[in-house]
Amino acid sequence: MHVRTKTNGILFVLMLSIPLIAELITATPDNVPGTGFSILLYEPFDFAYCLLTFVLLLFANISISKAHHSPLWESVMFSVVLFILWFVVSFVTVLQLHQNLGGTL
Image 1: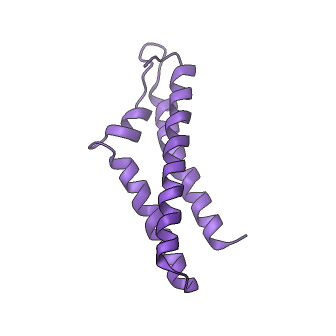
Image 2: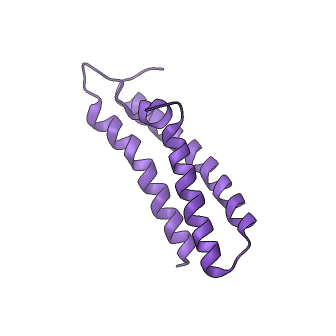
């Protein structure tokens, strides 16, 4: 398996799992809205977690491109596309988990 695929896959799953685990752990029958959305969108400032994810993806892909002597613009564009995909998947997944636990929007 290619280094870029493996690295991006691990980052994608790891960064997706943190808000999901937070939602599962903090949601109780009395307090349905867990903190998954707060981590994903608001804490400690608006879109901080998303920004962290984008920076990690960008750093990883630029490092891989430098090691393989690939053009940097390709790794930047790949990081942007992968980040957008990650955000959509994360938002929909946390939303579905939130609703399955009994929460509403």
